[in-house]
Amino acid sequence: MTLVSNDPSWWPLINATLIGSYFAVAGSVGIMYDWGLTFGKEIELIWRQRWSLMTFLYLSVCILCLKMNDAFSWMGDVVEVLLGVIMIARLHAMYQRSRKVLIFLVVIFLAITITNAVMTAILTTEITGEEFVLSGTYQCIIDFMGDSLFLDSMPWILSTVWEVLTLCLAVWIAVKQFRELRQHSASDIIGECFTVLIKTHVSYFVSFLAVSCFYIGLFSPTISANPYSLESQTYVGLAKIFQSVQSFVLGPRLILGVREYHAELVANSDTETAMTSIAFQERVHVSTGSSV
Image (cartoon, rainbow, N blue to C red; front, side, top):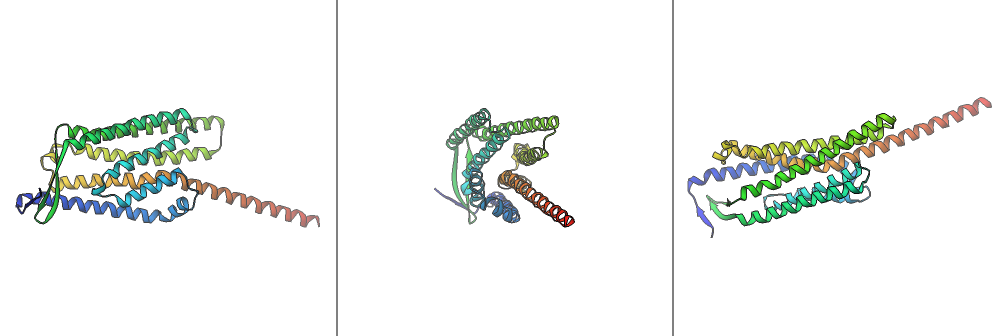
């Protein structure tokens, strides 16, 4: 049954909802602005290239970004799964397609994903929602019961474990490769490639760490005591913006950054080949002229 009320005591909740919607719009505008800046690169490096698993993952994240809103909050879980698959593919490539590493990562990721799905399913039985019409606005107030707060925090804890694990594996193999390159005086191309991989990975992890710190702050007594205040809603709004940037900006750039580096590498090699060909032709022309 829907409760209709014009009681002024509900106004703080209404204002908090409006503030949250403002931050949601601000985050969406920021993501669309970044997408506009990288759209040219996306056309060149994604759409015009041979389709692969990475192409599918990139476009899936972008499409879910366009559909993402409070009514489709489950899409956030889908995006996390897609980003996890991207991480597995990157680490698999960094470890020279090692089957052992691939099996290890897949097993760990599946265990975390299945556990999160079970926790989410249990959580849905621990919460209740009621529809309100407050001063002409539609609100859905959720009531947490039992161990719902613990169940709600478990997916975040497991996601943190996964992100730390992938970062450690990426840093370890990068350090190992750099040492081998120094010992054998190998080409800098491999070293530069690993540098690009590490830079994009660290940027993504730093954003995840920032989001984690924001969500830890939600347990602060100050926010818990007055969750509908302007300060509390501003804090929550910033946390959501950082999470959107992590998932829908830095997440796709895990793929776009590597493809951009590869395109530059191919362009530079083509330029060097063309310059070498021109120099060779000039030398042939000069030697022929002198002999005549």
